[in-house]
Length: 464
Ligand SMILES: Cc1ncc(COP(=O)(O)O)c(C=O)c1O
Image 1 (spheres, rainbow, N blue to C red):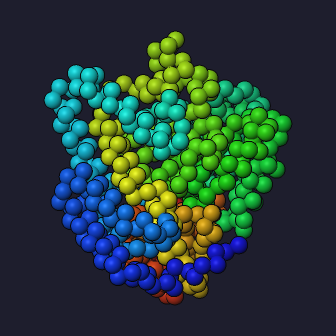
Image 2 (image 1 turned 60 degrees about the vertical axis):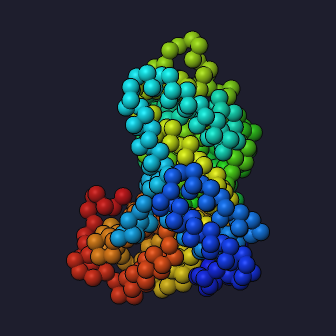
Image 3 (image 1 turned 180 degrees about the vertical axis):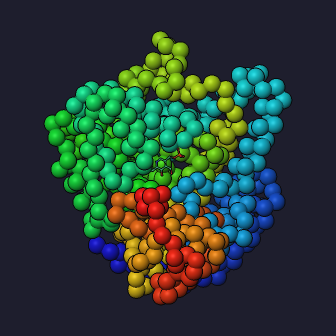
């Protein structure tokens, strides 16, 4: 069922009717917020965001998502160049200024005396980062490992889970390449049987997705790998339903949460998965090279680390997954600043803002002749990411045209039956930028690409 609300592209982009007093209050906060975000230290930014957020307290997260005055302040907390339009946040996201500044501060601290600072001061402080992440994810801190990215988190699990020859593992056509290739290694090394479920893009209803897993399960199925949000088209998967039907049959579930953590508002309890891996440099906006691995407590002992850790006392200790040798403390510690920024905005408010931005451009473009959306706009089926194509226009040529002629960054998707551009705005994206993007796509849908992009010929590297 499509949402009955008026499409956002038909709604006013100026702040909706609200009392004059609250409007002025919000505007005042936003202007202050913009100034503080640009000029002041991290504490001031957080205080000002918090004050501005309080002025939204009478509004639901969905209503708050449309308060441009508030989001203007948030946009100013970033150091993004406005000479380009970055609609490719599903790769990695820019951090807000306070996070980048924290990385610099912690780097100087470590440089005072690298070894001693690390051992005595910086490493112990990682524990508060672990606690902060566990609070957001809703689990015990002893179930959280601080790793470098989703790749590391998920490969620890996918390489480590005990599986034997003939055991079946389910994955989907929308799962990420390096996770699937990890399972290909297990095929070669251990003789597991990897079964790929082809998913519709988009499905008509969420039930189709859980149903596809249910039909693919056999008595030999031992493990399911599933993306919470698919990287190809932003499809949200019904993780709890999949976990329920898996657990009833003694099957474990690994969730690739690269795009869902700090994007959707949820806790571990809402998923009930056994393992979850994510990159924090994506939607949490933390420093590059930071990630999180969740392993359900009773399973930690059964998964060996990818790099050997001291045996014995570390067997059931989640920190065994962090033994990667010397590495910088600053990115890990500055996760705390990213968590603070996320928390003052509010998880649900952020989710609704990301969904609003996606709806803003997608609702407009889906009515345009020759335009095809590969993502459902039903609120539970997608959030900030969606994929769009124009009939007869190759995604590589389209992406290059958008970048070379218009400085609009998108990602080309040629996979799983999708021929389109993945579009992923972020909190710093303005409606004006999305209008510009829509105008360019409308023009291409009407007239096609100009030369030389029109003559683009796909080869092996561009066919996906
Ligand atoms: C679904 C998914 N999983 C995992 C990854 C890997 O993330 P990273 O490169 O940060 O390890 C990505 C990267 O975009 C992704 O989209």
